[in-house]
Each structure stands twice: as C-alpha cells, then as structure tokens.
Length: 438
Image 1 (tube, helix red, strand yellow):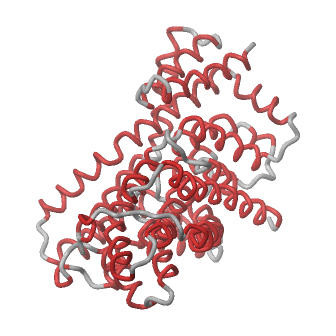
Image 2 (tube, rainbow, N blue to C red):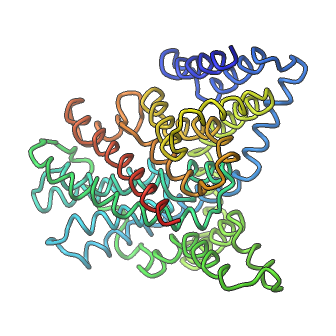
Image 3 (cartoon, rainbow, N blue to C red):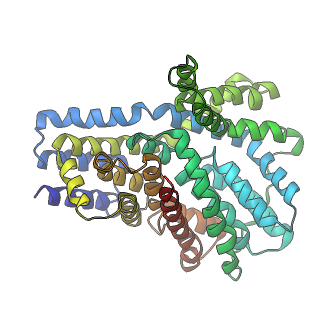
C-alpha cells in the first residue's frame, strides 16, 4: 500500500505541473504534504518535516546558485562572453566554424545559466548565418547542444549542484568526470548530428542581427576568459592538489576551505567584480544592480529545489524511502542505469530537467547506502543525463529553440528534441564507461 501511495503521489505531482499548470514549487509542497499524511506522518509533524527538507536542501546550495547567477549576469552584461565568442571565431575561422561555435558554447555555458546563454549567443548564431549564408539549425545546434550539456552535467549549474548535495558527492570530482563525459557528448549531439539537419529551413528574424556591445567597450579576451572560468579553474586546482596533501598536513584544512564550492564561488565573484567591473570603470552601485537583477533569474529554480527537498524529507521521515530502496534493489538493475531511467521518465512527463533530476534523486538516493560500490559523482551525472531526455512541448527550452529559430513543431522535435535525446544517451554511455575503470 505504501508503494502505491508514493506512486500515485508522484503521478499527482506530475499532473499538477503538466495538466493543471500549478507552479512547480507549490506542486512539490502539496504533493509532499499529501504523501506525508497518507504515509502516517502526524499532522502536527508534517509542517516541521517539510520545513526541515527545504532548509537542509537549500542550506548548502543557496550561496553557490546565487553567486553563480551573479557571476553569469556580470559576464553577460559586461560583454565578457561576447569577447570569448569573438575570440573563438577569430582563432578557428570559417573552415572550422562549427568547432568554434561548439567550443564557444561550452566555454560560455559553464558560467552561464542555459536561458541566459541561449539569448546571449543567438545574435552570434544569426550573424554567422547571415554572413556565410549557411543553414541556421546546422550552424546553431552545436552551440545550443554545448549549452544544454553544461547546464545538465557541470557545476555550478543548479541541477548538478543540487544532485551533488543529494548524493553527497565531491564537487571537484563531479566537475572532472562531467567534463570528460561532456566533451564527446557535445561533439556527437552537436556538430555530428547537425550534419543531418542541413535541409531544415529556418528564417531567423532580422532583429537578431545585433552585434552586441561595440568592440571598444568589451573587456580583453584573457580577462574575459579567466574571470568567467575562475570557478572551474579553482575547483579543478583544489581537487588536483588534494591528492598531494596528506590528511595529517596542516595545509589540509586550508585546502578544504578553498575547495568548498561556496568559498570558490564567493572568491570568483569577488575577483570578477574587480576584473570585469571596478577595474573597467563600472560603479559599485551599477554592479550591485546587476547582481540584484540576477537573483530574479534563479529565484524560482531555488524554490523548486527547496520543494524537492521537502519531498525527499517526507519520504525519509515516513521510512518509505528504505522500502523503496529495497524494492528497486530487487529489480537487479545497476543503480546508475536505474537513476538515469527514473530521471528520463520524469523528464518526459514533467518537462523540467531540474524537477526530473531532483525528484529522481530523492527516490534513488537511499540505494547508495546498500551499494557502496557506486561512485556518488557518477550517480550525479547519470541522473543529470537522464533529466535531459527528449525535451518536447512541455519544456520551456523546446519553445525557446522553436521560436528563436522560427521552426515548425515537427522540425523542432527532429532537431532540438532528438539532440537532447542524444545528450541523455551519450551521457549514460560515458558514465558507464568511466564506471568500468573505477
């Protein structure tokens, strides 16, 4: 009976979001309270359970997500991302145009949230299409694929960061494995797959011929590159150095301090505030206004993550999570594949990659206790890959791609939806390959 309650509770959650169009955060709260009461949690305790779940989930994430949003907004507003894109195009030229766009999307996608990155790079895509008279989807899909992969696989994006917390994984290790998997995934789903889409006709709007900021207003390439990617560099450096510092060393505590994701993001934001802002003549008040605006972009994401934490805590408090773990364990399926499959199914039903990943994590997390051989970072990436499976009409990313490229629904499914499916499948393949060697 308990399993049926959870099953119908999750179905009810999906219906609230998709059919009844209820806000995802409110849907999580309603479903969490309903499931908790039906599973026997006392009415007096249910409120505290929900609050604890939200607090535990957000406690370790708010700094990373907010600081990441602030850094991304600053990178976009100051033209640093535009400078990186222009530099890549200059280096690679027309012959390797797709490679340049793919690398540009990957580099820009690491610090920027997907929607911000999409809007930012689209003028570049339009400029290339108009300048070289090339098919728009063929040109644009590689850079969009790179943005999608970084959004789903790599910290400091909200979903990977949240999954790291859910599975108690190491942020630096997840970034390392994620990058190893992301690179071939982007190539397959981007440049290679786009070669089959040259015959799709897309008429881009003339309003996207904008070149962005004037060249003399842009920061230098080196400044843009270092400032944008400093969080990645710091996480990679501290992860590598940890292998050379013994646990007894006095430097171990210092390494742990600087490898903490919150500290990394705050240090990176402080550096970028100076290198991209103050040193180039921006007033502190203007920079703080940029940061204030950035919070609006991620507020709902933070609430959704908190709502997922409430559902997770409800399952843990009721004890059903252990029963679910035992039931799923009896399926005799590799937990990495199971996590991917659950996330993929929820993604197709709900549309939101963040909701799919976090909901799947709440169900699968208890499995790790009975499967110590499963690497937590690989579980993060497996669930993250599954959460990108087959985006369609219930996903805002689907409509963003469709409207900007001015495509029919059929052509959007053929290009965008199947690209996302390739990303999900290649991501799982990469996870399983790395798992062989661990």
